[in-house]
Image (cartoon, rainbow, N blue to C red):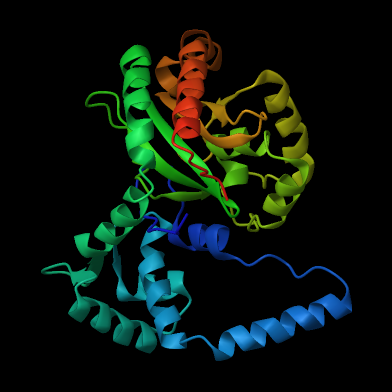
Length: 307
């Protein structure tokens, strides 16, 4: 599946730009023997020779808006994208002229335009995943009266494919279609990780970004693996969201015929009116049925979603 734009709305509990940048973009530490390291370095040098640095910087500007802010000043964009102000200024002017970024009138702030969103929706729409998943999510939302989401694994992140709100209820943050969140800190991500083949789980965990700047104690492998064992045993995860304060999440995997995760579905409820036990009692069975129905739809369509 192709990568698409990440652009969650800014909301209560969302990460500050610096923290989100560190969490989502910090490269993994180099591993392996010196010989392997030399080979990787040579490959990296070749990749750099074949790349266009100005284009890469332009995408860093666009991706800076995925930090949780819809509008940012030049200095904020430079800080999040780790570029100097002069380069940021030139890149922004280019993106404005191309129609991908707009200047907010009577302010010094910038925002993405719908031209960028069109690219993301076009990429995700070609897989027809939304069409397969949406009817089941709508039925689930009608039954439990809470928002529901479907996500898949892409690299070390969860990619949100579809989301259905519960009526006019707005949660602390609106996770949009195309949002990417590190799998280890997402309830959907943990539900997927718990049901991956061993080698794929190992590779995915190695791809996880560092979390030392996150707002909660880092979810280390030592903490995560026992939790994944419990999720594997229970078949679901229910917890308070570490992404958005005040939300309680119930998530269950969508499994293929071999029992491995294709993706996962989550239900999000305000914590003030739904304890973990209450959410589990009233929503777990509908959630499991929805996960089974999505699995059947994906299998019938011959769709492979996680990567």
